[in-house]
Structure formats: structure tokens, C-alpha cells
Image 1 (cartoon, helix red, strand yellow):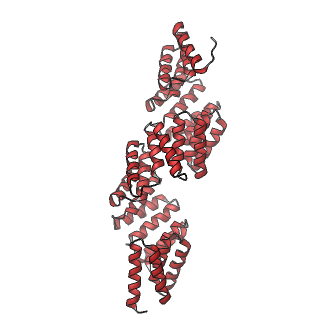
Image 2 (cartoon, helix red, strand yellow):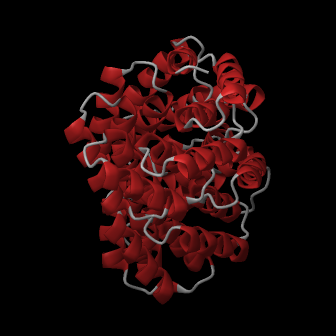
Length: 449
């Protein structure tokens, strides 16, 4: 075959690749290779077509044939690196990207692939540097901005990660990974209204992005719209049963709606999908505590911490479980560790208060409860424990006020009506106490004065 004919075949194949017509491109490259089997660019093109057809082993073999013919062909090294990343063979991918960059240090995509390989090796600082080098060479690479966001996310630089993903979307408004990480960062930053809006925009794309329904449900839960969150989560679980976010959102909403048995089943489903999900184990622990199963809750918290020792949630659940087991000194240390990781965690402050209360340090406990309530003014447990602590100090008027706040959070909570009655009794307000005790009877069906 003449050189001109080969060029025609090659250009036709490359155009088909650019048009994402991969089966046709593969056919063109294979027909050309029958006539010219020693053409390294044709083998590389065949590899790219196979990679996009999700045939990675065959793609790798094609790249190896290209490199056997010319081991200085930078595109083959780069494409091989990308294929190895997709296959999870990150050390080999890194070696190939280094080979590509040795041939062309200004090759932006090779820097991006090097960053992806380093991400797979959990070398996040180096990955970030590689992505930044790629963007210095070509700031229009939407994929690279998205990858930079992923690296920043792993380094817990969430605001910067969000900015990087937003840059990716400014370049490519339908970029799937950028949308996913933008929504995830908004959820991590507890910017739930923006996360909800981003989910709606992702769902409006054609085709809609399949990961959005589960994340929409989580955003609704974060906005304290539990019934809507549950409805959205159930739709997400039906539409995308393999999306763990739908099951997590379902569990979160059911927990908020005080349906712990169902919540536990949803957490278990999420962990069947992703056994290494720290949030799933931590949430499972919270639900087990609600079901008065503290030993199992402690085990769930320990697993969450084994998977991610840097997340406050695992420490919080562990601290609450230790309180439930009357292991107050340990609980205090663990809750303080949770607060170190997240000083805005209301549950950790309540757990600290519970531990201090158990250690007979009531004034310190009250300070912890105040902090918990400043962070979460709807925490009925914090009001209740605050009331108990104040009553133990014979500060009954203040205890009564705390119980009233707990009742505002949950008017059907029988035990708090009982403690309200006891506080009123201690204040000599017998008629009001009897009314509170009657409320206990109405709610629980039994009470003897």
C-alpha cells in the first residue's frame, strides 16, 4: 500500500475516533493493518478504538505492537498509560506516562495521565502537581480541571476542589465527572441549596446524569426536608439500585423520621454495594444506638475509623456508643478527638456532655450541651440531657425550660413529659405536674403516680 493510501486510512480512522464512531474506526484500522501490518500509528489508532469500546486487554496488546515497531512514539506510550489507569494498574501506568514525558515534556495529556496514575497510587500531592503542570500547558482541558478537583478533594481542600470542578464545567457543561464532584463538594461543604440546584441541572441534561437522583435526596435531607428526601431516595433506589447514594439518603431520611429498623436495612444495603464506605458504617452505628444495641454500634464505629481515621463521624459514633456502655473516660477522650476533627459537630459536643455528666462533672457537661445546642438548636437529646443535668443540680426552673425545648422538638416524646412532671413537682406545681404525667399516660399508655 502506498504512503498516500496509508495516510488516507489513518486520517479516516482518526476522524471516526474524533466523531466517537469507534466500531467504524476499528474496522478502518483493521482493514488498513491487513495491508500494512507494520504501521505503528495504525496500531495505536486501533488501540484507542478498542479502549473506547471497553476492550482494554486488546487495546493494551495493540499499543504494545505499536511500541514494538517504534518505542519513541509518544502517543502510544500515553495511550497505554491511560489504558493501564482504566485497568487499575497504576504503577505500570505511571511508568508509561514517564516514558511519554521523557519524549515530550510539554505533552499536557501525558501530565494528566501521570496525575491519574499517582491518584491511583494515593500520592495525592504529586498528582495535584502533575495536574497543575498539565493545566499550565493547556488550561482548556476540562478533564484535567475535574481531576485536579478530585486531588484537592482527597487533600481535604474542599473549597479549592469545588472551584476546580466549576472551571471544568465552564469549559464543558456536560462533563459527567465534573458535575459529580461539584455536587459532592457542595454536599461536603453543607451548601445544600446549591447542591440541590446542581442536581436539578444535572438531571436536566440530555441524557440526565444517573448519579444525580441519589445526591438530590441527600441534599433534601441536609435541608431538613426529610419526607421529600425519603421520596427522592426511594425513586433513586428504584431507578439506580446500584447507586449507593440513594440508599444512604434513604437511611439518613429514615433516621430523621425515627424509623430506625428501616434505616438500618438501608445502611446494610449501602454496605453491600460499597463495603468500604465509612459513612455507611458510621450511620449504621447511629441507628444501632437508636435500637439500644451499643456493642454493635461500637463495632460499626471502629470499622468506620479503620476505613477512614480522619473523619469525625466515626469518632462521634464511637464516643456515643462508649457513653451508652458507661465507659465515660474513654467516651470523653473520643468525643474530644471528634471535636478536634470537626468543631462544628453537634453530636460530638452532646456526646462530650454525656460523658462529663456520667463522670459527675455537671458544670462542664452543661457547657458542652450549650455548645451542642448552639450548633444544632433542634437536638432534642441535648435539651433532654441538659434538663437532667440541671435537675441534678436542683436548678428546676432551668431544667423545666430545657424540657420544654425538647418537647417543642418532639411533642410525642413520653420520657421528656415525665421529666417535665418531675421538675414541676419539685417546684411545688402539683397540678401542672399531674397534667404532664397525664400526657405520659396518653402517649405511653401507662403511668402510676
